[in-house]
Amino acid sequence: MTHRPHAPVPVPRAILLAAAAALAATALSHLVGWAVSQYLDSVHDTPDANIGAGLALILLPVPLAPVLAWPLVRTVRLPHPALTTLLGALLYLPLAVGAWGLWASALDGTRVGSLLAPVLGSVWSLAAAEAVALAVALAASAVLTTRHHARALRER
Image 1 (cartoon, rainbow, N blue to C red):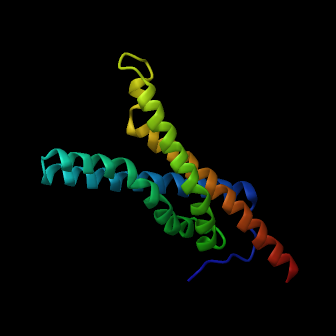
Image 2 (cartoon, helix red, strand yellow):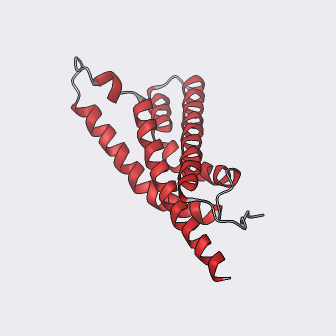
């Protein structure tokens, strides 16, 4: 059951709702990545399991965030939630991969005694960058689908 409101959603409200859904989806995806990494770490204590736990912590949230965004976009009642989420995912994935690449290169470039090492080396800085990327992507797609929905309602 897809929600299609009779009145168009104002653009600032659509941006705010999309950003809220993006932040919640990113937080949930990072919690899932953390839970998987903790499970892998507790089941096996070999170095290979620790590598897998680290990869789950860092890489699992990237594809999982747009998947978790779809029910949240439906919950905040944006028009055309499937289309909004699909467009947002297509915009988000390159942004998230770029954010991950910048995070990894910044992590490699920091010295141990640097003041930025604890900040850039934190997984929370990666989560914040991915949250901003998903918020921008979902907000842009929400504006596109909201304007399309408003134009379709005017033509009726």
